[in-house]
Amino acid sequence: MRSRKFLKAEQTALSWDTPGLMAGVDEAGRGPLAGPVVAAAVILDELNPIKGLADSKKLTALRREKLFDEIRAKALCCSIALATAEEIDSLNILQATLLAMRRAVEGLRLKPHKVLVDGNQLPRLSMLAEAIVKGDALVPSISAASILAKVYRDRWCAEFHLQYPQYGFAGHKGYGTAEHLAALRTHGACPQHRRSFGPVAEVLR
Image 1 (cartoon, rainbow, N blue to C red):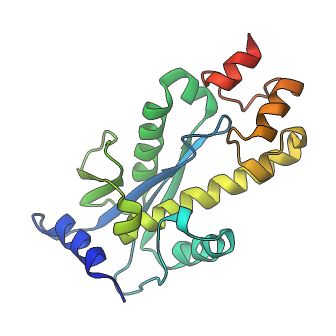
Image 2 (cartoon, helix red, strand yellow; image 1 turned 120 degrees about the vertical axis):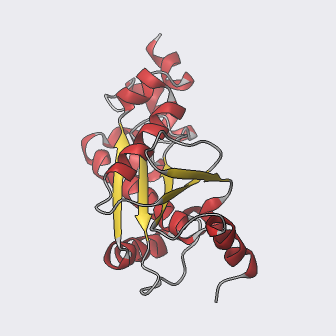
């Protein structure tokens, strides 16, 4: 059963709009030192609800994996997109994140009437959009998007680990852990490292 706070957030998002499809958008991977930033957009089916949606960071990896498959099966439509490490270095992480979000929305098979985005920044879109701080914990479609983005990026890291096992991507997912920083100092940067990020830039000097 949804909490009152949960329902209030949904009602607030819908209160002043005409009826239409609502898409939730979230990202994963703004903080890591390597790899793409991934965004997802999800339009849920009200007639086919998904139990247990929550901020992806609050869920176990196993639960996220199960929900990933359920979201893909039950949502009206969903889309996953990314901005590469090269784009992050060229644009900066904020603009690359907004680019990935825009690509995710544009990749939806159905065009939403309105887009609800986690956080306080909005990508450039052709439809109504609203930024909702902590939306991944309040709005089900944003929760679903956060799960898709997180699982997709974690899988990307696991695959990339096979190419560059010396960095330990399967474990730290690209974040600046002590293990990762030590590997950077020993092996230098690989093609997926974000050269504009401080710890990577220091290695390249």
